[in-house]
Every structure is written in structure tokens, then in C-alpha cells.
Length: 332
Picture 1 (cartoon, rainbow, N blue to C red):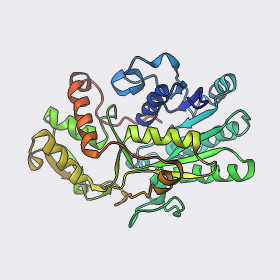
Picture 2: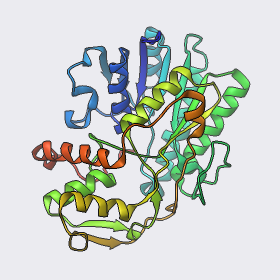
Picture 3: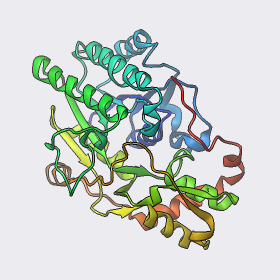
């Protein structure tokens, strides 16, 4: 297990947090998960799927209201690693209540950092951030690209990233940053593009394609992201940022067309173009050579194989998924 025994995962109810928790359990870690809501349905919690969750404990702690409880657990357990996935993360919705995004992603997050920097037992803090801080891109970019955020969400994440940089410089705080491309995989919330497309097509709903789906993204399977995050957590260099991405770019329209072909349905009959969201960046393309060359990470799951796995998850859980919310529900 390479000396890893205890890992705190903040935001363990999120897709990325739940998937990383599952991966950490597979590595033999004792995982302490925490999120602001009670655990979601098991269908959205990969760490509950394999029956190896005896080493997982869940704590309903909200970053905005339970800093003392979070820190009490951390001081009691003295984990080597804290991995933070918690954030107000919906981009388009951040325009409606920007103060909620800044409260969680900046004020409460920095309060956490100010407590964590005093924990001399902490080997590394993994700050899971976002390529949104860079704004739209003209080609593949490296980790030293200047920030140019275009939404309240992106500004809030950039602010916390910059604050952490001062903590590293002033206190030698053992932080590493991860920025992943668009993640997907089994267990993802139904309002995200891949599960939403599959769920809508399976249940006869017409899919709205924002702006015609012209923006281009790299989609990376969550297990590849989890393996990269683990490697960065254990072997990364403090103060460094690592991009987690594939080298394949696809437009959202091409992605939806690919899913339609897999599912044997007609694109034009089942998809309609809708207005694009405010401030949407047209391209995210992350150069991941730093992660590949310095830490030896390689992505393993092709988009085609990953989509097949997602469709199997949708079909295998369709009756349950019909009873779950398919739209984003905002919580302050």
C-alpha cells in the first residue's frame, strides 16, 4: 500500500470524490469521506459497489458550516493525506447566485486551508481544481498558462488556487493541484452530458444541445482520473500542478452523435439545439505530458470503451435511475 493508511476525502458524495474513494479502498486505504448532504443513492456511489467498503466511513459535514467538526476528525485520525473535491461546481448556474460560489469555493475553502496548514502530520493536501480557470483555449496548454476565468465559478476557483500558492510560499504548505479534463463514467449524475444523453434517449425524452454542441472537450474516464489523482497524491511534488487529460478532442455534438449510433437512434429526431450558456468556453485542451513524464501515468480507457461501460450502467440501473433527479438541484 506504499505506506498509505488513512485518507480524508472531502466531497465524497461528488462523482469524482466517490470514484476516488472507491479507488483508494482498492489500494487498501482507510477512507474518511465527508460531504454536505447525506450519502446519495448507492447507484451514484462507486465505493459502495464492490462490498469492500468496511474501511470507509461517512460524515455529513458541510464545508460552510462544519469546519470545526472536519478539523476535529482530522486531528483525531491524523491522516497522511487530505483530498478535497468539495466545491460549488456548476458553471452556468454560478451566474444566478455568485455569492454562493464564492462562499464555498473561496471563503470556506480558505478557512479550511488555514487550519490544515497547522497540521504537522499532513504529508500532502490534494486540491482538486479546474481547467475553467484558464478560460477558453486556442490549443493544448501547459500548467503554467496564465489564468483568464470567464464565469463566477471559474473566478472563485482561481481565487482559492492563488491563495494556496501564497500558503505554499509562506508556510511550505504541502499542496499539489490537479486539473482534469471532462470526467465521465458509471455513477455520474444524470444532468451531465454523457449520462443525460443516454438516459434521455433510453426514456424517450428529447435532448437539448446547448449552442449546437460546437465546443470541444477531452473526455477522460473517471478511473483514469482516480489513478492519476492517487499517483499525484503519493508521488507528486509539493507546490506543483498536474493536468489529467487524454490527447483526444471531440465536440459535444460529435460525442452525442457517437452515443446515438451506439444506441441505434436517430440524432435529428431525438436532439434539438438550444441556446448556449453564458460565458461558455469553446475549447479545453490540457497538455498532460508533465504527469505522464514525471510520474509515469498513462490513461487506460478509450472513449469508445468508456461509453460502452456507461451505457451498461444506465441499462443495468434504469428502473432505479427513473426514480432519481435528472436535473441539477442547487444547494446554497
